[in-house]
Image (tube, rainbow, N blue to C red):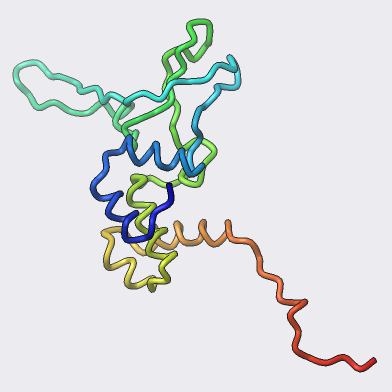
Length: 161
């Protein structure tokens, strides 16, 4: 299902991460399934649990840095007991547009929507709480995906025969 820009932005604001992930899978921006290359068995999409380190004597809990790196809160997980990576997590962003961004899927899509609606760079940067460098990197990646336009056959000049 394709949305208009305003409707899509409302959907991003109101929806949970899993609904956004399923929508991105539906429009082929994320993979629908992931097969780990060693065992060739499809991984399962699971909620990524964040482990807390509990300290004795009532000290504050902290997040384990190994498990708190996942922004999307969902990941692919290999559940083949014969695989060397059994129960390991893999990012849902593997082989997708979102692979190198450390922002949530919502935030990257908000920048893309505003750029697609021809909003100015200054306006996009002011409306979103990220640095101009991050916004510029998202826009640069979008521009690289656009095909090059060739106007060589649209000449208005007349040729003498």
